Length: 218
Image (cartoon, rainbow, N blue to C red; front, side):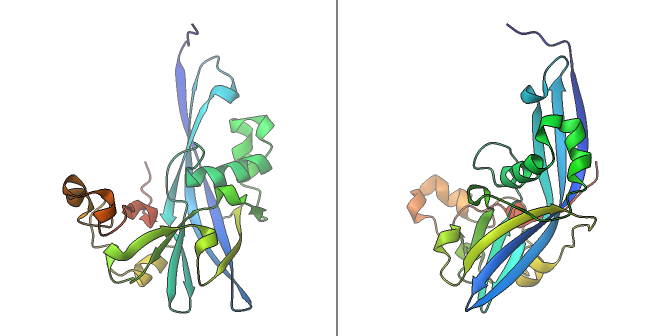
């Protein structure tokens, strides 16, 4: 059994630009958004960096992608560092580029200087969210990058930036987003889940926070 003498907490923040390169009808389009990413670091005293817990949380809004009449959003707005957690991908890409062997205390200042684009591995690409009808919350759906019918996602990049998150694109494309309460954007999903099989629910559970997550300084 290992005993820890105590624990310490700290928080670091960094502004990160996410860019999605989209190819459609012979043209490459670039859509980007800036997130403020807050890294909470919790480590027990006498514990090595390898055993520390780093929990990133992104604030801002999803990358809004408009190709013709098609609306799509690429989101890293989720919490977690476990495999499959979208933000973990951007976290790892930036972390790997910022001398991960130097540990948490050193890598954040280094990461802030990484203003050139770093490619995110495909396995760590963001969640893609589409709407069959942008005016109808029940038509939201998740889609894999390779299944998008109207465009090809060529690459996703991450880089540090001095810019701050600029909210508004999602609300412009989805005017109802700021009027609905938190939780799922499918307003009837949880009630219907109690009474119907999952395949009978009219819309997918997609958290509002995957589209917009305003920043509140703590």
